[in-house]
Length: 115
Length: 112
View 1 (spheres, rainbow over the protein chains, first blue to last red):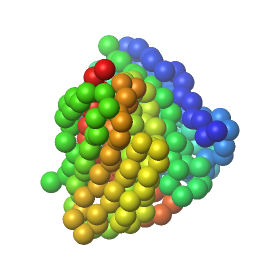
View 2 (view 1 turned 180 degrees about the vertical axis):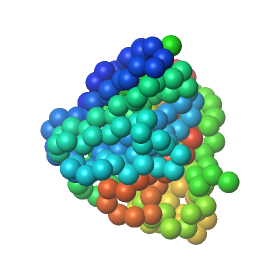
View 3 (view 1 turned 30 degrees about the horizontal axis):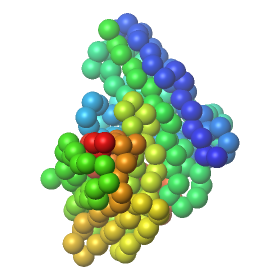
View 4 (view 1 turned 120 degrees about the vertical axis):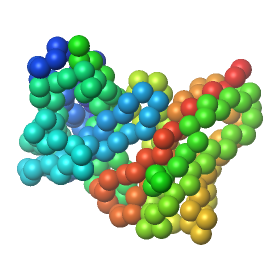
């Protein structure tokens, strides 16, 4: 149990376009989901916390108008990278809280390459 | 100074060796400590979590927390090539669905 999926696993897009990444909790409901960004050989950096039915909370330095987050249901959160630029190329990982004590389960990640 | 410091390695050991991975932190409010394993191009997988100081054992893995020294460790006994991965420590100050602060990760290779 406690499986989190992400789609797509890999995407290439052109500079200036928008890309949507989906995060789903497959066998549990997640009130809270988190979006992280990871550059090569670096650790995970939290971008935003997403609560079902409310606006996401963004970390300092993360542009909320550029990284749009929607948490429409207890099993789905989406991250849309708008007007993508090459510097947005990264590994994006979501996690979902199983509403238990610190059981945050991570998705497999989405590799975004902006050309 | 980063809130959580972790030696990025790389660390390479022979199969069967005992591996010691460590993190130090500066925020005395941290009470919840986790170790994640991340294979290349995959999401992190929770290995261990502990609350406050003490030891926790699960199979070949032992996690230790020393809050007085702000130091946590993960020990892997009888290491296997399949243990080769990046190991990330993570911690948080507040119970529940709260944001985690991660270390940089240590890249570990177990040589057959």
